[in-house]
Image (cartoon, rainbow over all chains, first blue to last red; front, side, top):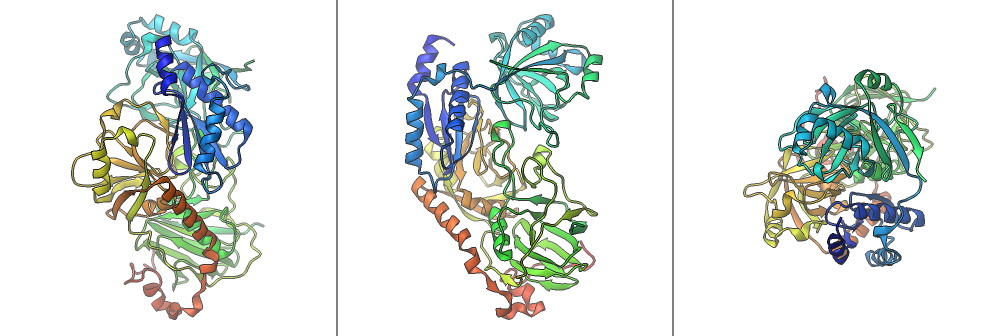
Length: 251
Length: 341
């Protein structure tokens, strides 16, 4: 992000909006950027820590923190004032990320029939398949948000070359654990679904298992590095609750 | 041994539902829970128990049920033709279902979601802190013939109560607030949205319902350029072809389509219960009016116990009249098919 961008962002953001009668959205940008995502994660973590009466639930999107509250017990004006006060308390764009985050090293197969769109995605990014795999395995990405389906992370951000569009026609079915790319992000799919993202790899991760002791593996703010593996090794990892991934606490 | 309710025959859309699972939004799981929360509150009032208990939600049609013990039941939501061992029983009322008797619940005469409540609530295994099925997330499953569901303990005995019938089962006017994207819509689109006579499309489920209308679509210029943002039940997305789509309890947690408005939570049951073809129109209200409407709705829920009346005081307790006069207020719905649908 350039300094010019930062200036525009801070002129109109952070921005507080009501979202329905029982929601407030605090946005730190109009489009995805690392500082806006950092601010949203840090701000929401502080709201959770402070535990305001009347706030019932909170979450983050790519660039915003959202609060659901009970408007019969916490008025809009009062909540807005609390949010304003907390916003002006510090520079959220430079706030440290919340504690308790983890680093995941996730084995993946790139290309082959397990990642059938690797070549075309690489071409769209102006890279060879080998260079593409290098980008996917050497960029440490952050779980910028979880959404669309339970436990499903949007990971970013990749180098500028990966600002490639989603496909205009949908792939009819991408499997659970698939890795797909577009708009400088990777998505690791928690369910089999149609998608416009380009399918470049496969992991053994089962990100949402409602009956497991640990139903959700990833959390917003976690960091991920992919390591390249082969189909046979990956197949053996499928019985592992973490899909062969290694997890460590981030400082 | 735990007492159970056995399902002998299940309509195509039966699930266990409660008030849902708050707290998992950040992990991509929407709250879910009953499509019509007011119907849960009505059942709780009829049985004199907590609104947190779990009921069976029935989409369009019910099924055939048998309990292993004498069981207090209440029937709320979309009125459906119901009988115990062939004798018609009133909707929006509580009854005793004797052990081993057959409860049959047929098709809805209006509305979409009917609810079968039991004294003590259903007690299936908990998942992520709740009992409700969230099919979109792969939690729980559709109920099927042969299923047995555990019943919670019930120390109360009162039955034979009814609540006045509500008007939320045939569409109507829905109050809306501006959403996070409304100011990016030209005023003309918002005005036309308010002026349009919509109907509920046939496409709809617990995740949301699509609207149908004659005329142009509602997609604004910004349509394809917005960053994905948190989305909640009640939000009205304008999908790619310009069609409005109202999200319901089992919706996704983020959405990339622009939202023209958002429905007041207290009016969401009216959307969920509008059957295909029912008229719907939308009216913007101020934030102050919205809070006041929510306050009134919360008060109405708190007052439900006061509005209960004994079934016996109504002339319609004569079984044959009951179905005609209490259930729909006009000529009945469909006759109950004793052989089952």
